[in-house]
Image 1: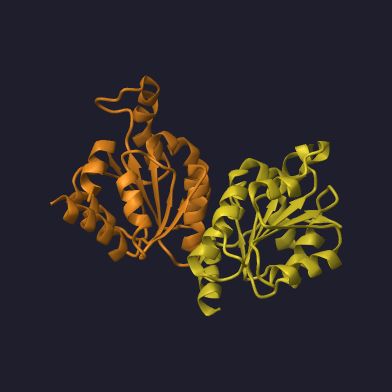
Image 2: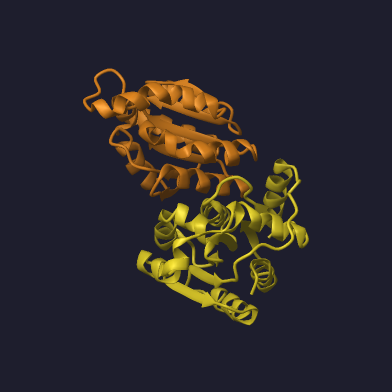
Length: 165
Length: 186
């Protein structure tokens, strides 16, 4: 089951033409990052900061590619100007795969405020939000609105469960 | 050498490349001097022209020249690391250094007080860094950048001050679509 879940997520990305991948690492997304690195269908550029990653995805979109950003929600604040003045302004596609810290069971108190702010910030930046948990719902969200701006939110544990081979 | 002269010399010397121009006065000066369909004007995202250019290069496999100011590259210094680690050999970043925040009142940047951006790029691991202070040096650097063995960072030292400006009034989706067309046709 878990192997086919990972395959469903990778195929969901590839079949939607979402093959230009950037990332700022997250523990919950680590299995998916490793799988993307091992899959020749994807170009993967690890970045130093989330705003830079949005810039790379925007550039890929200027070249006709569809960009993906894997990140933790703690970095959402770093993306705001790029989401608005770049991705929204030029109407570029972007898929954000966001590992949601600051929810139920969070161990680090400092993660809680951004956990509360994340959805409001994304909505203010005109990014559609999909709450997902299993591989099927994640893959379905990857297929929808391929030229739009979408963030798939799931807990670190759900990302790991959905993408562990 | 004025900023706009450096940018135009760069575009002349790299006539086969799609180009990315950084937000603020640079876009407006370049636009005032004459629009060029292979230029992507990054109009609102200070610091991201280098990243946008890198995404275009990696996403297309085509040669790209990205221009960035001294203040704007300082806003996204991680870009030098990502370029060193991931840029293709024909990617060019040109840092146009006028030692000040030209778009916001001319406040000096650290390059006015000893910071060496070329040394910073080398320390980040960028394999080829070339300093240019004249248009002839830009032309020579462009030939070297095209010879392989890059990526290349050009440090263009220019005089402070702005030239004639014109607000870029192109539709943003038109800027997007012409970049896609240019890259698809190459």
